[in-house]
Image (cartoon, rainbow, N blue to C red):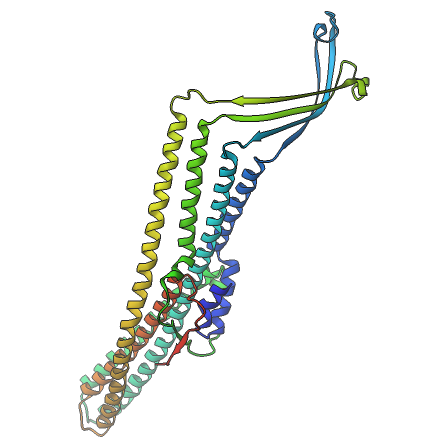
Length: 423
């Protein structure tokens, strides 16, 4: 729906949109929530049916002493066939309140299904963006590895010429091996993230293929001034509120258990001691009755049911309050994260620019024999560390943005998101 479109549209990544769509139909958590919704709707139909006329057909043959039929002591056979009808008068609203509670339960399950769908979409988006970030980070590490290997070849040639000692070669070999280890760790991280993404979209990890990326995903910026009323659209908050109303309805159901119940019953058909004459007009029979039941003493059972319904209502109210507070906290957490991450990204960008320049200068001076090898290695390590840190900050911005969209219920009104500049 619109919420799922909001979840992915701002990132402008077709591969992400495809994965979110696949998860919507194949994710097992969504399927379980859909099953619970179907169960709640079946219970609603069952509750509604109790307010309708109940009709059934009956037929039977009885062999008994004939005094009740013919006035004779000779055993006789009595055949019956007909329809039975019953209807309970809902004078005090018990049946309607039961039906209302079941309807509210179904509405809450529908909201929880949407909440589950939103959670899965957010998990898919965050896992996908983390996987793309790990791929980019691996590219950075491989670039540094290639630079270290080039420096190693240069240092080995200089050692053979007698310009440097074996210690310089050993230092560079250490950097090459350590960088290879970091590359392998990132490959492992990619495999784990890909497996997690496969499970989210309902596929077997071993056969999952990640769609090719068209480029770096954009970073949407939620417009300022989003009103707090959008939290009322959060499906989990809506479900908690609906659960409160269902609990209120069930308090009324428990209270009406003290009131009398009136059931109208009727039957019409045929009864005859001769099966051959069973369906003749003369064998017709009918009856109408009303049954009144009034509870007098039950050992405290109904009182306990009322107390239990009130206790469940208090639980629902507390759960609703907790859900609202959690919603506000999640929004404030993500807003604070994005605010500080924006400043961190700007500062980290300056650090990357300076580190790149330092590496260029150190490489030139080292090749001309003006600085030691230690200075060049330090410059390379500093550049790689700062570039990876910048990428991690960018990933944290992606994650916080997805978290904010989820905290707002997948939507933030009619305003379109802006797109942040690429780093």
